[in-house]
Each structure stands twice: as structure tokens, then as C-alpha cells.
Length: 227
Image (cartoon, rainbow, N blue to C red):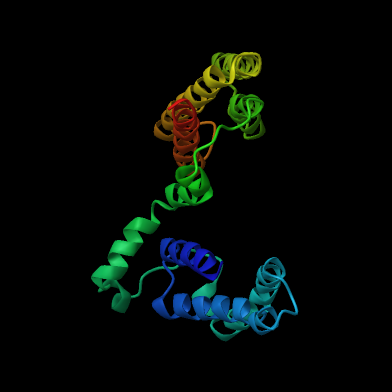
């Protein structure tokens, strides 16, 4: 859990252009927070899940101390490089480039379980998949163009129909239909990413990767089951 939290935090801080000292301080705080419950876990006083939960709790005051010690380096705005930091080490420069793709990394982290152990997402989730952009776009007032609104309503209806078809067909076919539905949604995500409309670009990027993994996982699960 410490590695998971620290890895994501490092990438985000690199994306926000935090100083190396600030990143190291935050990583130390995360490590300390998760280390506090370990003695109680080792002695059998608490369970593993409880240790993880308490670790999340103790991380908060640990991070508060770090923010109090170096507030300027952890302000809410995006940090700017200082002249000294412009001569950044090659490793940090590479990590900075990777951090720019944080939505992709986040999606891969969220779908890691499906990568190592493919399964089929429930059919009803397709209803959410088809309507999410209609809801987000409406909330962001992106449908002033009525033709665009009609397209998204049609998409929501199509995914609802796909969910219905997947529910009332045999499992193998249903798995393929569900997988194809997710993969086609990734194409939809890609178009939104390029056009920069309806949803935020980072959201479209993350969803595209997420959808591809879930879709391929569903089809892979069918292949494995029938092999």
C-alpha cells in the first residue's frame, strides 16, 4: 500500500512540478504514516486490513507536518521551475515526461486486476457507459448544439440496447458483446480527446485506456473459458 500511494503521489507531484525536496519529504511522510500501525500488526493486536486503514489515517497528520515545514513548495498552484531546477537530471526529466500521462497510468492502476486476471464486467454497466457522457456534457453545458445532443442520446440508447442484448444471450456471446461495447467506447473516448469537447481531456484519456483494458479483458475471459 505504501508503494502504491507513493508511486501515484510521486507521478502527480512531478506533473505539478514540485521540487525534489518536496517530493522526498512527502514520500517520507507517507512511509511514516503507514509504518506507525506495523508494530501493532506484527504483534497480532490488529489485522492487516486494519493496519492499512490506520496507515491512511496516520498519513494525514504526517503530511500536515510536511506542509507546515515547507509551505511554499507545496502550495496549491502549479509550481514553476527555478533556474537551478531547469538543469534537471535525466532521470527526473524522464519521470516528468511519464507523469504527463498520469491519466493513462491511473487507468492502468485501476484495471491492473483485470490485466492479470481477466473477467467480464456486468452487462448493466454498459448503461452507465453509454449515458455518462450525456450526463457530464449536460452538466458542463456542452450540448448547445442540438445535433450533438441527439448523437449522445442515441449513443445512450444504443448502449442500453447492448446491455439488454447481453443480458438475454448465452454467456460466451454476452462476454464478446460486452467486450466490444467497451472497446467501441474507447474509440468514442479518443474522438472526445482529440476534439476536446463534452468532457475534460484527462478524463477522456483515462477512460480510453480503462475501456480498452476492460473490453479486452472480457473477450480474453471468454477465450480462456472456451479454450
